[in-house]
Amino acid sequence: MSDLKEITKEEFKNINEIQIENSQNINQLGILEFQIQKLTKEKLNITNNIELTEQKFQDELKKVEKKYGNINLDLSTGKFTETKENSELITK
Image: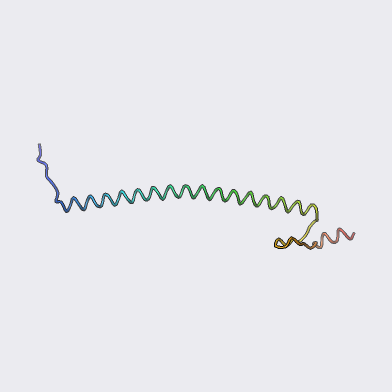
């Protein structure tokens, strides 16, 4: 059997500190990966909401177009002007 020998206290301290630092880094990486997954899901949710909102917007514009014809709508005031095509159809 071989005799047990020891490294110096300083060597042991250095190795131990490096191991602790490495464990902390690995832990931080895991936390970041979890946050990335959460943010990716949140991004997907927001993207889906944007698509739904855009579809609602287009649907409402189609309703307005059906009622008033082709118009130039000022979205900040709700006022509109008829397009040339629409004016020509009305006057004919």
